[in-house]
Structure formats: structure tokens, C-alpha cells
Length: 219
Image (tube, rainbow, N blue to C red; front, side, top):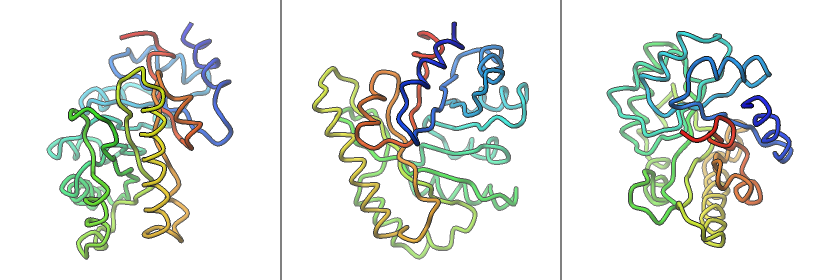
């Protein structure tokens, strides 16, 4: 069933949109099933679970850390993580850089912005991100690479509000690209959209959708 769900979701994706199959709380056997069907990018939100699955599953899986990341957990995923979506503070980015130096890796990261109505969501304000990107301290970080931005819309049935929040994130992406990463081809990802709103996100320019329950079933 989950294999059929995967193909159904893939058939709805617009050209150029990458699917991150969100496998949090799901067993390694489910991930293996989708791996065998050709899916390579998987998203987890808990560090311990991500590490365990990385050890148990094929090594060419691209692991995306999509949840809130605590600084004291960074060291466990830096050796292998493919992309960290939720960089929501300068402190966290500096910690990722510090651990990446030890592994001699450059870690791809997305800046997470707070675009939702709910206070519970993490993320930069646009002003905070600007301040960071213009600092000398940021320029000195040689072991992280900013590949784009990420955000989560409000959990609501208000379609108009979701559109507006995704539009806001798209605007942030374009402003940051033009001001700070104009000649950087790696800055290209706009990670927004989950099972309930990824169609809307794609309409607003998403390049990467994080879909879990539509593929794996409800948790």
C-alpha cells in the first residue's frame, strides 16, 4: 500500500519538485520498501531515531533532518546527514559548523523562517536572518552551506492564509537569494509543504515537499 501511495504522490508533483518521504515514527522495514521502489530522500525529526535508521538501512539514503535540532545533538548527525532543514538560530548554525570541521564535511543547511500564526513554530524572523547573513561571523563559517529556506504554514483550513504564508516564504527566498546568494547556484531550495498543504506549496514555488502521512498512513 505505501508503495502505491508513494507513486500516487509522485504523480502529483510538479516538475522540479523533490519529494522528501517523512518516515518519522515508522519502522525501518517501511523505509526499505520505499527504498526498493526507488525513493532515496527520507525525512526524520528526532536525532536518535535518525541515527538508528541510518545504521540499519542502505548507506546511499539521503537523510533529511526536518525537525527542531538542539545544539547538543548536532554531533550525532553531522557525519552523514544530507540536509538540515530546520536551522532556526545563529547559535545552531555555528554549532553545525563546529562539528562539521571535525568531520571535514560541509553541511548543506536551510534557514527556517517563522511564517505561521502559531507561536509554537520555530524559525528566524526576516530581520534576524539579515543580521546574521551580514555579520562577519557568518562569513567565517566555512563548513556550512546555505542551500535555501524552509518554513511551515499554520495548521488551519483557511486556504487563503496558507497561500499568503507560503507567498511570504517565497518572497524571503527571493530577497535573500538576490541580496546574499546571487551568484551561488547551490542556494535554490524552497522547502515548504507537507501532506495537508503540499499542493498549495507547489503553487507558491516550493522545490521540496515533506510528505509523511499521505504515504505512510497516519501515525
